[in-house]
Every structure is written in structure tokens, then in C-alpha cells.
Amino acid sequence: MEFLGATQTATYCGPKKSCLLPEVAPTSISQDSYQSYYLPGYRYLSSWRPSLFYKVSSFRPNDDGQGGGHLSAPLRPPTILPSMRTSLYARYSPHDWFNANQVQFRGSEAYRHWAGRLNADSVRLMQDKEQLTRQQQEDSGKNLGQRMADIDFWRSELQYELERLLTETRALDTAKRRLECAADEAQGPLQVALECLYCREKRMGIDLVHDDVEKNLIQEVDLIRTCQEKMRKLAERIDQQLNINRDAQHALERDLGDKNSAHFIDEKCYNLRNTSDSINYYHGVEKIDGTVSVPETWAKFSDDNIRYSQNARSNSTILRDETEHTLERASEDMWQQYTDTNLAFNRRISEVAEAKNKLQAQLAKTLQEIFQTENTIMLLERAIMAKECPLKVVQTRLEARTWRPNMELCRDVPQFKLVNEVFTIDDTLQTLKLRLREAQDTLQLLILNKARLEHDLLVKANSLFIDKEKCMGMRKTFPSTPRLVGYT
Image (cartoon, rainbow, N blue to C red):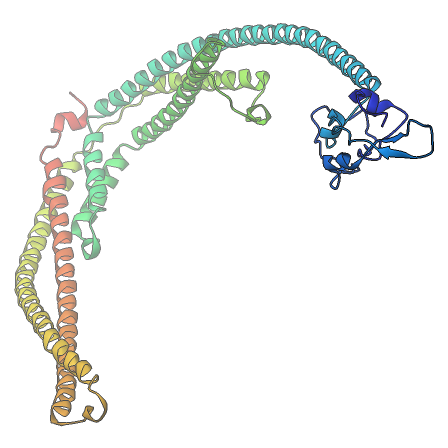
């Protein structure tokens, strides 16, 4: 019993092992200190009990030295050692414990060294990238400033050219008005006749006819144009040149507006800072290339617009010089043609007014018939709705009688009468619905006829308005003879 009183380490490391203690399975020193204590490979002592030691007695020899002897009193129970109480826990040697600590120390030193290098490199990297970002931001700001200066230059050029073009356009328009006035105001009657023709083109439907009024207006236009052929050609050229000027003006204004928008956007971008509130992420925007020009084509575009405007101004100056030498006098026949046209207008107005009165009478009769048909439809609908409750009652009775038991389910006289009542009500409903559809179809025809009458009335009213109000309203005045011949 050498293990009595031995320490836990001595018991674990000693050369002798007790047959009563469990044998500990070998363990690895690489396992963590917080590993599970219930590891595979351990043998657990389940049959050993401390009571076994009470049965062990010491044999003592006799005093006479003979071979006999007697059993002494039983010994005290042996001490339960810690190695026995904790037989389920892992045990390591001091060597393993020191080796594990050394491995932990070396690993910690390596991690700290690596982390220190990483922190130093990260600080240097952040400083380099911060300097690069700041430099690029400053360069972008300088480029935006230079771009704004270029935009300001072309904006001033476009504004100057636009002002000169507007001045020239106003001068050309004034020359055109002087030409019209100097031609004994013959252009006035021509515009009135043309306006009458244009207004009469707005007539609708059957009223769009080639009547005497239109024939006289065409003759009046031809007469005025024949007398003023040269002035007309010059006026057309002036009109074309005005359109060209407006086109150039539109190009300049559009280019100037684009320059203003671009300057506003670039100025906004130039004023953006890292502390601005309006900055945000726009992922993938750097991959979008929506540009349509390069600096060379951008400058050439504005230069072409300016050159186009300069050419338009040059042509306008030539036309204004030519208008000073182009004057035509009016013909005395304008008065006769003016009177004939007015008489044709009066005859046409009387014919249209008479047709309009007849259409209004037909419309009143149609409206009365529509009112009566709508009342009939309303009565038919009420009659159909009145048959719904009797139909529900008889069908409910029939459904309830289907639940009669056994022999009571008899086809008696009430059953026959109820079925006959259902068929009668259904036939009544079908007849009423058919009559309702006929009435509705009739109402639709009346409404269609009403729409046609109203459309014809609208056509006639439109024709009366054009001939009586617009055309005759414009033809109330006519230039005097001295003005037509160009003396005043």
C-alpha cells in the first residue's frame, strides 16, 4: 500500500500504479485549458468502493517466533486521494504546462508584432491617399475654374451677337412694315382677303363648299397680287429672311441658355466642399460617358452659331437697302371687287341662317320625342323591377316545398300552380326586357339623330360666325383711294 499518503503529482508520475485507481489515458499538450473533461479514452471506475478497505486485515506473527500468527484488528479506512476523487478530470505534467505557456507567449508576441507593422503601414497609407485625394480635388477645382472662364468668354460673345441680331431683325421688320405702308396700303386688303379665306377654311362638314363668296375672295386676292407682284416677292424674301433670323436667334438663345446652365452647374460643382450638405454617393456614375463633344468641337459649335448669325445680319442689311427702292401703286379695281365680295357674303349669310332655323325646329321635335321615350324606358324598368319580388316569392316557395319528406313530396295542385306561375313571370320578364331593349334602341337612334342635328347646327353656327362676325367684321373698313394709289 505504498500510495497511502502520496501526493497527487507523485501518484500520477510515480512508477507504481494502484490496481484500485483508474488508469488515465494519455493527453496532448496542444489541447486548450478549457476543453471538455469528459474525453474519450478515459476509463471510469464504477465498481470501486471505499468499503473494500474495511475487509483488509494485517497479519501479525506470534511472539514465540513460530509460524503461527493471528489476525490483528482491521486498519482504518484509507484516505481518499484527490487523484481518486477527480478521476474524471484531465491531468497534465508540469512540462506540458510550461510548454503550453511558452507557445502562448510566442504566439502573442508574433501577433502583436504583426499588428504593430500593420498599424504603421495603415497610417502611412492613409496619409499618402489623403494627400493624393486632396491634390486631385484641388486640380479638379482649378480645371472647373478654367472651364467657367471659357464659358464666360463664349457667353459674352454670344450675348453681344444676339443683341446685334435682335437689333437687325427689328430693323428688317420695320422695313417690311414701311414697304407695306408705302405700297398705298394695298397689303392691308390682301391680308384681309387672305384672312377671310383662312377663316372660311375652318368651316366644318357640308358647309365647306366652294361658293360665290370664296370665288370672289380668290379673285380679290389675285387682283391685289397682280398689282403688287414685285412688292409681294420682296415681302416673301423678307419673310424668309426673318425666319432665318429667328432660326439664328433661336440657335444663339439655345446656345446661350446651355452656356448659362453649364456655368451654373460648374459653379455649383466648384463650390462643393467635403462639408457640403448636398453631396451623396452615386455608384457607377464614373462609368457613364454621356459627353457629345470635345473642347475643340465645343468651341467650334459656338463659333458656327456666331458666323451663321453674322451672315443673316448681312443678308438682312441687303434686303433693307432693296426695300427703299421697291414701291408699287394700288389698282382702282379693288373697290369694285371689294363691293362684289361683300354682296356675296350677304347672300351666303341669309342662306345659312334660313337652314339653321329649320334645323332648330327639327331638333326641338326630336328632343320632345326623346323625353317621351325616356319616360317609357323608365316605366318599363319599373315594371321589370316590380316582377322581381313575385318571382323571388314563388321560387322561394318551390325551394321550400322541395324539403317535404318522403311521400309528402307530391306534385299537387299548389306545386303545379307554382311552377306555372314561375314560367308566366319569366315570360312576362322576357317580354318586358325585349320591349325595353327596343325602347333603348329607339332612344339611341333618337339620340344619334339629335347629335347629327346638333352637329349640323354647330356647323351652321360656325359658318355664320365666320362669315358674319369674323370675315365681315374685318371687311368693315377699306383704304381710301388716295391711300390705295400711294399718295398719302
